[in-house]
Image (cartoon, rainbow, N blue to C red; front, side, top):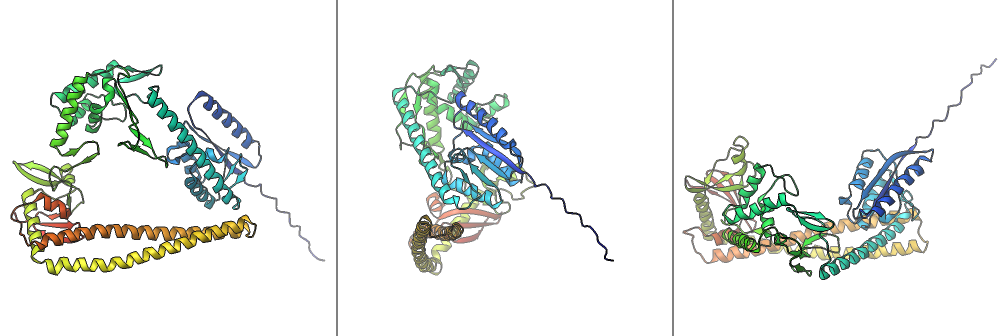
Length: 514
């Protein structure tokens, strides 16, 4: 008789719940907008918890921040970080404009999440990024959202400019020494005492560095950050707000939403007697004249943010052991250069100080050798560089032709897809291939273009060096002009050897004679 064994049916394993998160954002910090945010919070929590196959993974949100730059939105960045850590499977967003108004950032973020199997559902547009055919539509809608953001930004700029012009603009940030009361700038007497002391100390001859150090020693906190610096003190001395005036339009935002200092590219408006002054105009003018004089003494170019070196070697001498910059110091009345790391910790770098005149003498010897051997070294370098550049220019031109062909191919694919001649999966595959080809061409072209630019700079440097050597003049004393013209950096290998890296690309070593 046959033996029969019953095999029990395998119980169906319960389907794993999808961890669903939501993201919400309001553009301003007004009470009306924050109330809207509270409504969104309640809506998404109820909406997600109502689905039996969904698990509520939390709501991420940002208050009062722009949608044009993801880097400024902490809530969104936290959500993306949790996605990377595998804590979220699916995301719900009210609309594309709430997620991002920057097309490139939007598409790149969605693709990165899709690669991890994490998709986004945009309620307003009814788009699920899990369906690849939605990407073309998503690109279009993201572009519209970006255009909308630009329009809003332009309207906002116009409004700000109008308030600049008629004097009704209200400052959002109060400088040290002031506080906001009912929308007006009011003097904060405790901080104002510090401001007056800063101006008095500077006029009396104390440096901005010394003033900053004294404030830090007294435990006084600045408006921003934890410590005072010479830069902060100098900025306060130049700030017209301390005499009751305001210069509006010091910065501006370009079409890519990047902020710049206004050096005259945009209109500015100067308002006198805008608010109560903390220091007198006489003290303000005296401090600024002294600041300008000190800048000229130290060769600091005011307004540009750039420091013109007081000594030719300053900023150009580096350590061959640890790579740190060398600083100029006076030792026993003799100017020397010493490794910055060695100054801070002699155990971390063993390089010892080298006299400035010894480095200058090594430079003179090196330049005299180049002058003597100009035909064997310089002319050969100049000829070789010209031969290589022709091939690079030819390759750049070919890449440009390839890029135009790829663009034409992309347009054809999009037309075929719009007419229904391409399956969504095939369209996506072709689109990805074209995008990858574009990326390859752009990367190579950028690299070659930078190389050409570098070559051009080196070619100019070689021409200058050949012209100098062609004069046949031997250096008998150190020339700051010749050093700055031809030397990129000096690397101190040891106390007896220096490496000179020239702007033309040559790297030559020379003995340091003590």
